[in-house]
Image (tube, rainbow, N blue to C red; front, side, top):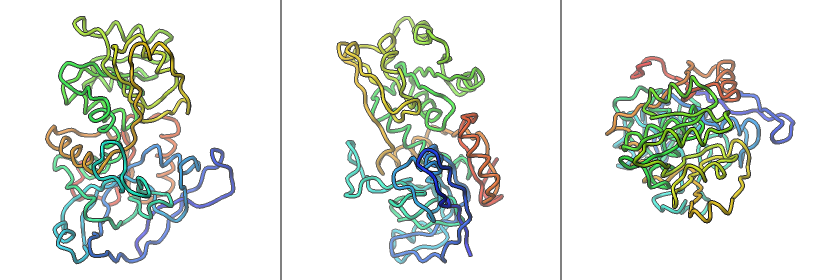
Amino acid sequence: MPSAIAIRQIDGKPGQVYYPLEKISLPEPQPKDNEVVITISAAALNHRDLFIRQHLYPGTTFGVPLLADGCGVVTSTGSSSTAQKWKGKRVVINPGSGWKDDPEGPEGEKGYLILGGTKMNPSGTLGEYMIADAGELEEAPEHLSDVEAASVPLCGLTAWRAVMTKSGQAKQGRNIFVTGIGGGVAIMALLFAAAAGANVYVSSGSEEKLQKAKELGAVGGINYKEADWDKKLLGMLPKDRPYLDAIIDGAGGDIVKRSLKVLKAGGVIVSYGMTVSPKMDWLMGVVLKNIELKGSTMGSRKEFADMIEFVRSKNIKPVISRSIQGLDIEALDGLFEDMKKGSQFGKLAVELKAGGSSKL
């Protein structure tokens, strides 16, 4: 029978437990009229998958395949003409449903339902196949390998909305600062902003990661472990535009305080995560400077299509930190350990089908 990887329940409190991985059997696929069966060739991890194993993510459950990122080939379909047109095509899957095109947020009554490991959505990409609605697919960009294509959807969508929709500053000559370079979202934010013509600056606690970011197009980088990094960042900015237009942040912490020195009046902080702390101080100084703070999570079906087209037209490639072969639990645990340590630069991926169109 076809297999997938899920988490197995053990006793433990949220944040203290670490659910083990287990291989589960999938039933033979039976797609409904407008559904397709995708033979998964590659899948990729995101931080939410680590949070699920720690029971720190809403709706965490058992027996549902993990992961929201995937690439594969449509091998069978339901009876609708919309579904049948996808037969034989290599596709990437929209990582969530319930959000069509409203720029403010999901329209669905149940909210936004992300793939992988929760009660909200019974499907995930870490298996030999998955069933998806035909309306949630995009053709995988031709210049990407299976592993690369699988590594784009969730982090690409999150970065796209944060940079292109929310910041409004991904334009020629604008200055954008991306914090915590090394994770998938931050790297995609760098690639998108640079491809749009912005000057991109980054932060990391690792000099090696800062150097790699510069090789990807960052104009400059600062080490956030240095006490006066905001002052150093200010000194890197061009003389004819000596301020930041936007900050794309996934950490939280003291970013609002630091923004006072480097953001222009009316500048924007886009927060897509808060890995340092679930709280941030909001200071009167940023109010007086008319600075905006905008939350940003995932994105709509329209934004997903726009993002994939941008990746295709600009020949953008995600960075792969490391990939493994097959549904091997010990090897998968190794990828999760990389994520725990924060040692990766780029995406952590799984190649389920050796060969094919993978170029790695």
